[in-house]
Image 1 (tube, rainbow, N blue to C red):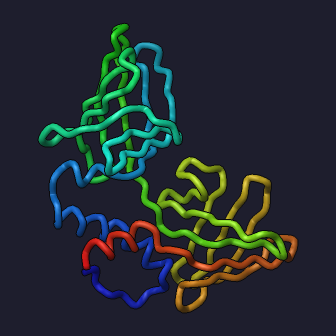
Image 2: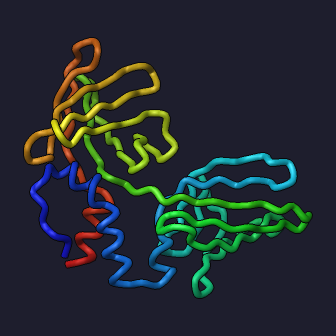
Amino acid sequence: MLRTVKLLGVVQCLCFVHEAVGQSEKKDDDVEHRVRGTYMAVSTNLKTRERTNCVCELTANHDVVVDGKPWGKWDTKKTSVVLLPDDKDQAEFELRFKTKTLLIGMGESKKGQKISWEMDRVYLVAVWEHQAGNGKPGEIRLWSNGRVGRPDGRATWKMNPKDASLVLKWPEGWIDTCKISSDGKRYEGRNQNGTLISGKLISKGELEESTKDSL
């Protein structure tokens, strides 16, 4: 079980999500268990140097999902991960861990195009019900790379554990400055126009899932 730490719930989510994942790895140290998750991915055509950014998910069912669309399957070979596209004209990739969260590798298409592939793991830190003024509440997701919504979203978030402040910046120009409650389950504040901003914690993201797995 994850050790109990007397910190705000959302602070705990941010600071110990990597610890939770690490403990899951200790429980099942095979490559297959390690690679499941969400990644910020970059592919580079080594001839043209053209780069493509995307969000890549490796699911428990061995599906590869790129930007929300099915791409293919993944499998493991001892210490490496193989990405197998549904489109057989595309390159297959064999990736290895460069760090605990970074996968890198190469592939070559049937047309002879050599492509490098990098996948950097991101973690879901928390899910909140967010409301501005009397507007309709909506669900927002906070990712470990400081993005809101999707791992490649334009909105950002930043938190200061010292004073439990949470700042949300939206692409439309709105800035929400909030204070997180002592139990970590709510936040409240205002934007630059003075509109009341509030939020209720729905889940602690991947930390919560890792805690369930460790029980």
